[in-house]
Length: 346
Ligand code: AMP
Ligand code: MG
Image (cartoon, rainbow, N blue to C red):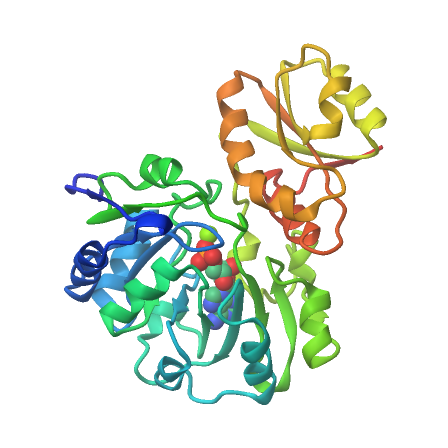
């Protein structure tokens, strides 16, 4: 396998950005290498989006299924024209409102982007990250970067440098060690090709925020179901995904119901819960992932909590289901996949 490379660790923190280090990472990427870079959503595994060999190396390093397309990251609007063949008016308005930021828009793919970036689809997913280090790296490269999340395929996305290193050491040319990711779940993905507006993956920009700018947005059935039948619009949503090694079950109920259920478990259990649940859990091993009514705190903590819960020696992890409003919809969507769609409703 692809896990015997010398991986350089490059420290670039937001309070001490070093131009020479940005340049070093950009040089690696420009010459066809792979670099793990920080973004405001999760750490990304980046390569030159115009270089099909480098793009193929991303799939190999992650063990990513070939039918799961990548997101192309840009630093400014000038780069967009080379990536897509057409910018719908809805995309222009959403870009004005939410770029740079955690919003990915799918449009018709331009000729310069190799088909492998989009897993053969005639569309391409594009995002302008707000993380200034990510944008400076893209700018120094002078080319867009294809970048999925920097985890091994199927695992929780890395939201800290430590977890990016745990998954990618020996598989990439360099890893930028930087701050923890501010948002903590991947970007919102919205399909805007052929006059459609369809939410394929919820994320840091909420459905309500999209609709405030472009009006009604359809929610793809894959967002809240396993979509085992029918056409898959977003290939990445069809897999069991984001999962720790331990089995996960999502439990939907209020704090008392949740704690009561989890404490009665016949198997050695751990809780991935809200801070408000902790006093009700007694001696049960647990990791709190956020506050109950605070969707942003839940998004920020969920992937780290899933990774930490794997270290608690449990046979089953019970994750407390968040409310599905705002960014909570994204957290619910990720937990549903971590649990391979197993939900207990109390
Ligand atoms: P990741 O790069 O790990 O954040 O995953 C990217 C997500 O965007 C996956 O769920 C993909 O299926 C989705 N995606 C990327 N490009 C397209 C596209 N052209 N059409 C539909 N979904 C896409
Ligand atoms: Mg991913």
